[in-house]
Image 1: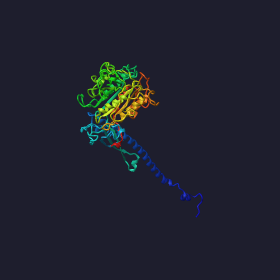
Image 2: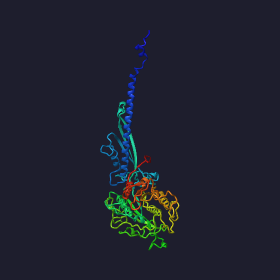
Image 3: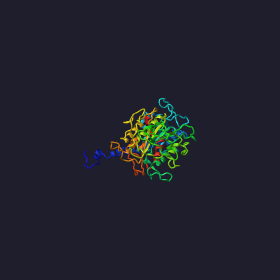
Image 4: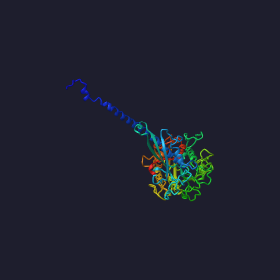
Length: 521
């Protein structure tokens, strides 16, 4: 039998048009599966990011609550920020959070030095907010905690994946945070303020207080310290009056140039008695009286006494009280009130290193376990002193200050000496594994100078940055000083317009809870 060329039979036997009927359902099924994957995976990713955000918020909130004795327990606070219930913070209707677990740990700061962990809380409290951690006599003898970890689990409802029988997907997220500083973690804070003549010259028009703007740079710095003292915790937050209760945040004050030394051979120290870098000078009252008077000063290699105020917590009578003007510390930084506030005697120019060494010696001599030592250095200018006379060597009992240990300070390399002194201070490990955190506040420091240094790249700005702990984004601040430098600020620093904002930022940093790697648990 033969078929004509145009017959339909050969086309039916040899054609492929009918395969479309089979292919279309298969392609549609593939497209539907792809849509399910893309849409549901996109929703899963979005939901996971929401869960991570809620978990991190819960960890930081719980860490903050660990240091607030009068507040709710840290577990309760963490749960409140978890987003698990509709009334919680960070609640997302599309996210079904099925579980929130909270654990605590005491992380030895020496084991993770780069995390800047606060010391462990000094005691557990079964009623919260200090959960108990396993005792470690070598470090955590009080069984308190300094870290929190939150794990949250959730279910995400699918869309197209339901066609394939997958109605929900399970996800989880974990975040860890440090405890905050207030209340539970006491601080020893040594302020090191520049009182050279330049700090008393001119008016910083960028500095105002209560609508007034006629302050010298030194007065502006003191107003910033007043803000700082107003935000610290002199004693536990649940006390109506500190009284004889244990101190929480204690503050001391050093200045440069230093007051008259014990070396009577220099001839400028009337009635001097034996002084050291860790005791209060008999001339401190010149800085703390109202009105204050210029104290006698001495050259930087003549064993000057930098300490004006030892560690005190009487700057406020309770955590909620205003500044206590009966405190010598408050009077010494009392610019703007009753003619109080340290003067700026000047006379021997600027040299940072001696005051930094003295501050660290004092911090070490007065260190207490589970208390974080802090140094705040504020200056406006170049290290350029021409008054380096004297015969008293600068020594330290332990550790080595590069190029200086056991020797007189050098009249050259003055900026570099400041950085080396600060590096030594930051490297001094205490018995509990902690080390001093150093904040540096450049108040209009120049972007060129340091003429006694042979390295061209050494500048006052670079010096102030070198003094600070790392990273600069946390510890190095630059504020313009309209009285002297026309608004100069340093690159690489946290740039803030007003000094009081700097001190507010520092207190926020001291008291804040920070996210830390989960590996520490």
